[in-house]
Length: 326
Image 1 (cartoon, rainbow, N blue to C red):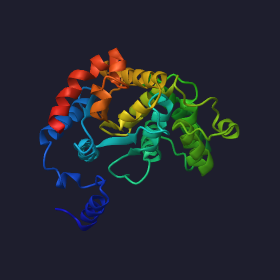
Image 2: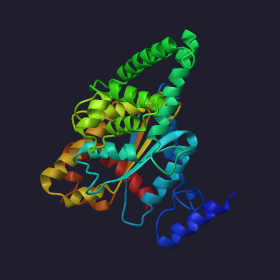
Image 3: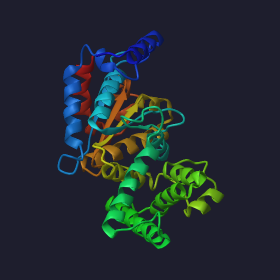
């Protein structure tokens, strides 16, 4: 049944000519086949299905063909299934040719069914670390609230556990384990600044300065050489936190067409890399949904056709989707 707040949100969005942020299934009049198909895809990549798989779809069509609306419907379904969702828009700030900006936008845009208003990354990390803390206390019969030695042992074992789990994610970048540990230590010590700095560094925040990095115990930053490993770590933490997977919606990929040829090529190369990693099941639990216009795919100039390897990977999928979104 439609509640008043959802109904008001729908009406306001329609008056503004935008897609409602919730309640889209009430407006769904077409594309049911596509919706059902994408829901089956989510079930396939879910961590509950043989430890998870990965997948992608490229939806394209003219402006007003329903691409963004369909994504919002699938986003709503994913949240209700227990997925975390991140929806980003390619722009001057979020550049496909600079994957680190895409990663940062994924972290900033992260949402869960219980946390839809702002990034859920803090909630996700706290859920995971609280679970690990509880398991360690029970396994070793510790009482950290009453015994200083037990508290010290808990922190030592927790740091070991963080290292073991991040290693399982094949994330070898120096600093990830230390930053997660510093985040938790900040929480335990009531040091909000330390926990914020640590979480910001993990999320790719470029404003984290040398002083903050020294407090966290890390060097460097998220960049094009390590952003993929940070994404692997995020997926593993989502699994440990009890989520079914991660849906990433990358909207308005056609923005890349405005860039000069060498930048377009690098953007398309990054897109090809992501699709290859998905095809090899390297991003278990992750489903990527890309949207773009007809010109991005079909135009002979300034389009994906400039990158033969990428075009050959998405052509059969995009044409099939295009016919059904119209």
